[in-house]
Length: 119
Image 1 (tube, rainbow, N blue to C red):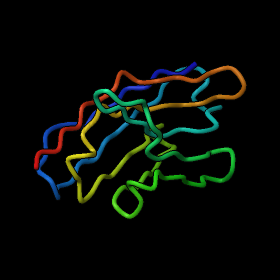
Image 2 (image 1 turned 135 degrees about the vertical axis):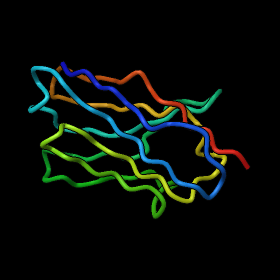
Image 3 (image 1 turned 180 degrees about the horizontal axis):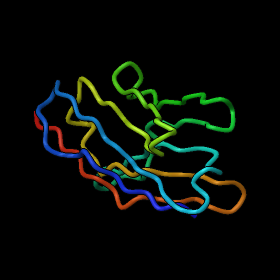
Image 4 (image 1 turned 45 degrees about the vertical axis):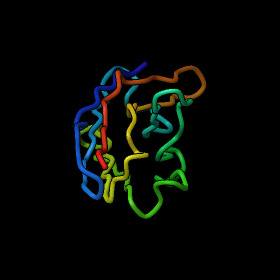
């Protein structure tokens, strides 16, 4: 299992930018297969935002709603994954969670960081 700590959330006006960070730690951090970001808005289900598949050479996957606006990146030396969010919209308001999957057993979540986009 790994521990995930997110930071970087906050309040921003529509059209603005934020960068989220997630630091991973623990005995199995080097075995993570997929790491990335999900979000959950009030009254809605948690949804995938962007992930990196470390096992497949770092391929990236984005939700259609954030393509062209958000970019996920990873610094393996720092065990950190970032989410650069540009051109933010009010509908991006949610709690953003870092997630790490280590097959076959572990599916770990951070505590979440709030992102609020005002119109």
